[in-house]
Length: 503
Image 1 (cartoon, helix red, strand yellow):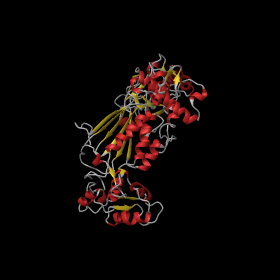
Image 2 (cartoon, helix red, strand yellow; image 1 turned 90 degrees about the horizontal axis):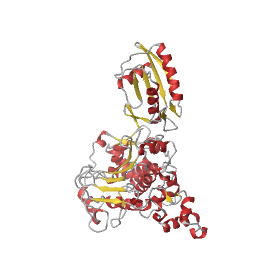
Image 3 (cartoon, rainbow, N blue to C red; image 1 turned 45 degrees about the vertical axis):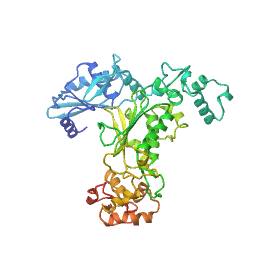
Image 4 (cartoon, helix red, strand yellow; image 1 turned 60 degrees about the horizontal axis):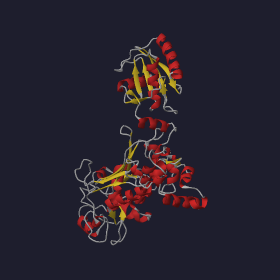
């Protein structure tokens, strides 16, 4: 750390990664600070600084004493031992000792009295709640929620028929052919401990998992507007059952509450879901398999007029962030569940679910909310709309009674042709670029469902360039392989609801 960096940190004040201390004389107090940083995300202890950020300074004798105290605390008063690094910065008010503590790989760390500390904002706090202790052990790989036996459960809670069908499908022989009883099969598959099924066994093959695990379900609600506190809702469902049943019913809920669009299909066809179905297949499976089952809370699906939110209990593991999972990095939080779900749900593994969903529909935002301990996926809907009316057969692309809410029906096309010169696909491109920046021509083609490049350029892209809605990022090299397209100022000013059907 340089003096300039120190000055910037002091100006910003204390936070979860930067703790100011005037001095340390008590080894237990120092150990507690080291434990808190190692158990959270690491950081810096700045010794010789008041809580206000004013440098009080240390003498050379102070530095010598603190180094000895630090060495003893890290090796004898922190278990397992850690290896902090120290450096000294000279300021006009004296020396500042900078102690760097890396995020620990062997969590949870405890002090000499067996207490576990974590950072809580700029302060620290002692961990006593069972669920939080379980999560710390989970991060260390010492315990997995899906492998914990479910108290009060027995083999009688397992659907033997469903288990037998799975066994037959996976191992190409029936349980009867092996001569194994249900209890032994569950144990051999890692789904039970003795006569007690674990959480993975109950969620995959339980007859009524929510009887013993009521929080492990899905709450789904569709709202008419764009805010959560709306008094009214269009549709709601508490979705329970095993994971396969939860997946099936959740996908059905989403599909019946979204619009269908004709795109390039015939008028009498059902149409395609406004957001590709593949997006929800991937994200639902990801939520069911990778949520934190140490958190007693439901997965939530909330459908608004402009977006769909899928909220999973538990933030991302410390080794991951939203950028890493966008590029396919993953962490098996529930390895037992995952190893079997791959044969039951449409799960492809290897961290490809979220990248595949984003590839199919780029208008997806990922939010890792560590303060609320949840992970949220926000899927922008295809067309911005006002409040919706209650869903019905006429509003989901059925052959009879096309409504104004049906994107692409003949009546809507005729009504809106005079409002703007943009086609539906051109409008979708402007919305995409407005939300996610510039894109290549192949990316834009994929997004609007076009396959013929020359027709796409002629009918969609070139008109946008001509009227000044879209521009090239490399205008002096129109045929560059690195060419991308972005909105102009005029394009950003367009109102998405003003559209016609020039397709």
